[in-house]
Length: 146
Image 1 (cartoon, one colour):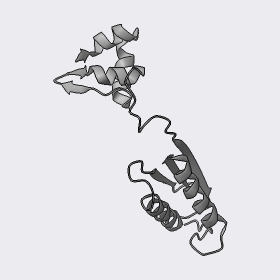
Image 2 (image 1 turned 90 degrees about the vertical axis):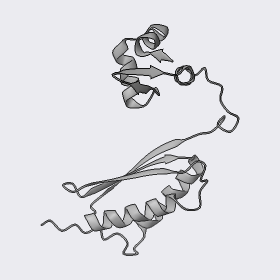
Image 3 (image 1 turned 180 degrees about the horizontal axis):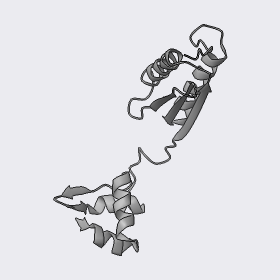
Image 4 (image 1 turned 60 degrees about the vertical axis):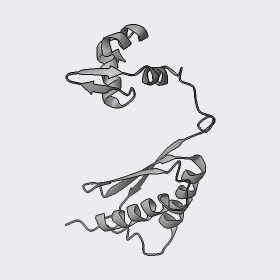
């Protein structure tokens, strides 16, 4: 186990930078009292020296942000439910899609953030495209200002 100071010295970084890595989740650490301790394997993972398991090699991940303007809260909720349901069914459970939705009440805008396997993400984006361009009533795009 290394201290933050030892890691900073080994990497030639400032102590604050190492603490920032820990807070952001970029570097795993255990807090003991008021100090952090970093395992050698976690330091190796940060620097890319860790041995990569065969199951992880060659794996790709994509991130996508879909912004939909002119939707009310109810339509954004329906869209979010559809996307989350699709992301949680029929995909590789070992590498699930990660989806987050954010609705901006003031701008009548929803954002959908998708992280995951390229093929599964593409499938979900195709679904979104079909729903957003269909006249099926799922999204009532008329926004009524109160």
